Image 1 (cartoon, rainbow, N blue to C red):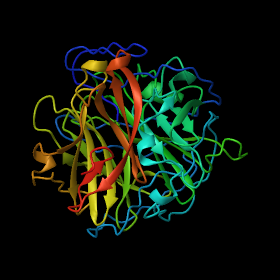
Image 2: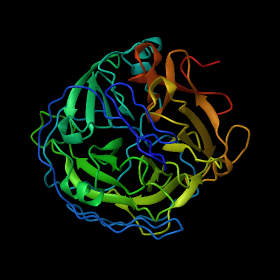
Image 3: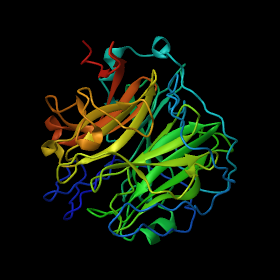
Image 4: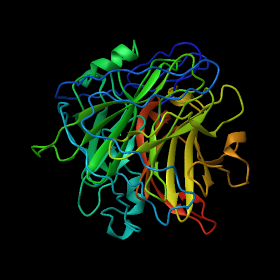
Length: 428
């Protein structure tokens, strides 16, 4: 959901992001904001060993929960989707302080929410307002509740913290602040040069909202995926408070992976998994545990997707359980070059959350496979950085009619007779 290339540096502007050859990274959003709260601190961890995929560390500082390890992932596929985003998310910034996470039970998304949707299908695409959301993590509103999008930060806004946008109806969007008013100090110590946070993921489990995000720098894999939690997403609630839970996965220059672009999924037994990665050796996966939301062990990360073509431009992994399958969505190509971007969304599926994933033609995603789901269309250039909430996919694109400005897009997902996803407008 964010990009980094193992090459030279990226130059970013407010609306168009020009990239040096072979490098892209998430642009900072260009909008006004008001953030509040103070950052919490946590200890950084050690990285991985040279020349091989390193085992990311598991301890997280400032954790106010006690972690209990779950068992390894079951081979049994899910009966229904369990990875739905939360119904509501905070719309203003707040400070980080202590919080107790809840006990572990899985919250499954409703099997069919389309009939209760307050807007018509064709209206989703006609978005208005502040749409400058890169790497959007969507929370679809239901039963009259608001919609929210978390997105990559901007060093000049809220100290670079993750941004929030909200909508009452899924069409009209406005900027709603940042999670904190600055990046937690331990992150800037662990990743020198990091000035804003990238590619958020929001996931609800047993009444706790888990916000995963990344810290990194251009063209390097000295990166961290970190976690913050909240027991409520109503900013008017006295308990509303984003708590820094520290590091989840760490990569270093000696690692063969890049710890950015988190995506959370639960398997059929309710065991949580974190998919991540960008370039380097592709998409990886580690097991998490509830209620901490941190790593369950220090095993070497699994590999689940690889383009097999230099510079291995695959990232932004997001896994959706559906009707006995796990669907792995990834972004291919180069983002962040405005109207010159060639980003696109691909998909594969597996009966097991850990793979092997194959595309529609049966080609393994570890061997360069992937079925293109969404590509450039007219002025909507380079779609990618996707997330899914219930039956809607969010992604960003670059508007060629507006000098390549970053824009938010929403499309409904339909599942064909053969089980493969189609997006609204592409449905046959």
